[in-house]
Amino acid sequence: MSEYDVIVIGAGPVGENAADYAHQGGLSVALVEAERVGGECSYWACIPSKALLRTPMAVAAARRLPGVTAEFDPKAVFARRDYFTSRGDDSGQAEWVASAGITLVRGHGRLVGEKRVQVGEQTLTARRAVVLATGSSPVRPPIPGIDSVRTWGSREATSADAVPPRLGVLGGGVVGCEMAQAYARLGAQVTMLVRGRLLPAFEEVVAEKVEAGLRADGVDVRYAGLDAVAPGILLTVGAETIEVDELLLATGRRANTADLGLESVGLDGVEADDSGLVLGDWLYAVGDVAGRAPLTHQGKYEARIAGAAIVARAAGRSVDPAPWSEYAATADHVAVPQVVFTDPEVAHVGRTAGPGDREIVIDIAVAGSSLEADGYDGKAIMVVDPAREVIVGATFVGQDVAEMLHAATIAIVGEVPLGRLWHAVPAFPTISEVWLRLLEAYRAGRA
Image (cartoon, rainbow, N blue to C red; front, side, top):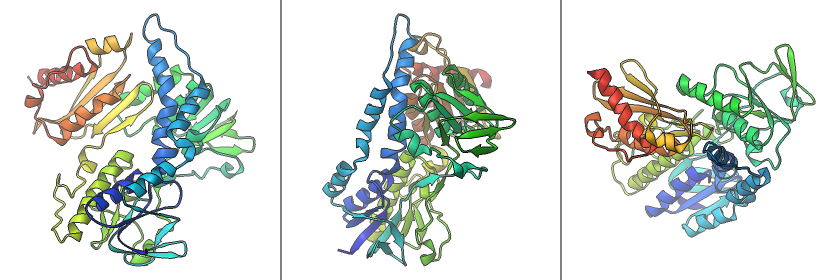
C-alpha cells in the first residue's frame, strides 16, 4: 500500500500522538521512522536522563533526614536506565504502532512534492495531510580543534555504560546542568564551562540555587568559554589547560529540517500556526521541528491539536484556531511547563516577570517543607498580572517541587482569579502550603 490519508514523518512520542489521533478520527495513517520507534525521548533524552538522576537524588534526599544512611551502586543506576530504555530495542513500541492500526514504514522520509513522501525507493502519497515530526539535533560549536577529539552529545551522555573519571561539560543549560550533576553523583570529577550564567531562561535566583547544588556535589563550575581543544581531550580555557576523559557538548539544539525536501514544495523553513499547519491545508509540523516549545510534552500537545485539525478538515468541518479551542495550541504561548531535574529541582510555567507584572518571591519555609527535609532550602516565585489579578507565571526551586507544577499550570491556563484561588486550601502539612504564603504576600503588598 502506498496511499494513505495521513503520512507522519518521525515516530517519536510526538509523531506517535499525531498518528494515533488521526487514526482514531477514522483516517488511515503511515508512520515513517529512520531510527527507533519512540524517538529521542524514549532512548536518549528525557527517560534515560531522569533514570540517571533519580536514584542519586533519592539517596541525597534520604540523607537530609536524621538517622538515615544511604548509598547506591552506579551499576544499578545504569541497569535501571537500561530497563526503561529497553536497551535500545524498539520492538515493543513498533508492536504498539501495529496494535493501534497504524502502518510503520522504516526509512528516511522526505517530501518530493505536494502530499508525496519518498522513503528509500518507495513513494507514499497522502490523501489528506503530511505531518513533520522530525525533532531536533544537538548543535556542535565551532571551537578550534573540536573535531580532533571524541566528544559526547546528549545521546552519548545518557547511553554511556560507565562513569568517566573526569568529565568536561560545555554549556550551562538544562542538559549541561542535569548531566553534570548526574555524573558527579555517579563518581566523576566534573568541570563545567559556562558562558553567561546557568539556566539563563530562568530567574537569577534559580541559577544561584542550582549552582550551589552543583558545587555541593563537587562540580567545578567555571564561568568561562572553551577556547580550543587538542588531542587527548585537552581543553584550553584562558591560560589553563584542563585534561578530561570525556567532553559533553551541551550547547543547544536545532530543528531537523535538513533533507526533508522542503524545497520541493517551495519552502526554505518551517513555521506552523496554532493548529500545526505550515502550508496549504495539508502540511503540518509538530514538536521540536516546529520551533515553538521544544519539550516532549508540548510536542505531544501540539500533535493532539494537529490530529484534531486534520480529522476535522478531512470531514469538511471548519477549523478555526481561536485561542483555547481544540484546534489551537494556545498553551505554547502562555503556559509551557518545564522541570529541570537537578537537585534542587526547578519547576517553571508561564512567563518570568515583565513590565507591568508583580513578582512575589518567598522562601519555601512552611511546615510541609520542614518535614520534607531538614534545612529545606527553596524559593517560590509567583508572577501576577495585577490588572486582571491572575497568575501568569510561577517558578519553584527546591527539593521535590516538580510535582507542584501542575497546580500552577492549571491556575494559568484557567486564568483563575486570585480571589477564587484564595479558597483553594492547601493540605497541611505539605510543601503546597507555599501557595497560601504567596497569596498572603501578594495581599500584603496590595494593601
